[in-house]
Length: 263
Ligand SMILES: [Fe+2]
Image (cartoon, rainbow, N blue to C red; front, side):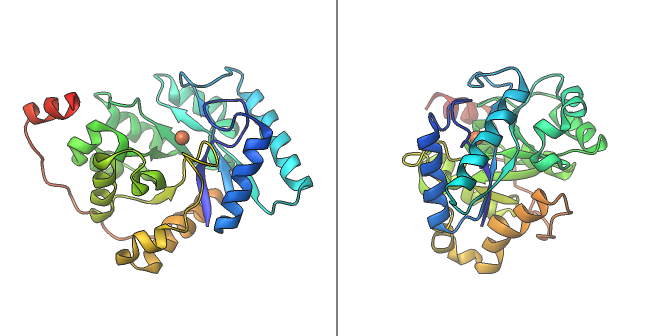
């Protein structure tokens, strides 16, 4: 398995707090059957600890070296979880090697927790026209996408991909995120499941439980979500075809949406 969303670089965001903790995450993941992890620290986010992107990369290489010395057997690949900022297109063009996964066309895109900006569809379209492929992180955790999956569907239609968190399927983010994750899988609107691990315990790595949890999807489909598509992403290849998406039906009214926000 290949985990394309992890917070394993110590001391750069709200993920691993020390090298010891980072190495523990790597060992837990390796024991679970994960053979490669993309290190995706939060950048341009309020939890990002540095504005100099080079600092993330320096610390990435320190961790990679340490893991190699200890022969953990985990391949560590560079990447980032990129917060949706207004000058994102310019930043991607300038810092492609530091913001994308393994200097590919693919990058992890984080929306603000409860906001999808008007014009996002056109912005994503423009990003794709620039040659980038945004992978929208954990839409199942966003009340906006949860309320109306059609908004996500429209972003995927113009070329974005969607990644859900394994933790959502463990129930770590509550019943609404769990239900939304299942719903998005049902609509075939999920391309990758990743751990989004932050520590060895509460927000832990590990993807193997998905084979049991999602057994109704079949092994081949789960292989695609945790290995086939992630492998294509890190190698900058076109992703394997997962078949057509199902267009989600319109959900409830705006009043219901507001009620949901107040829960
Ligand atoms: Fe993350």
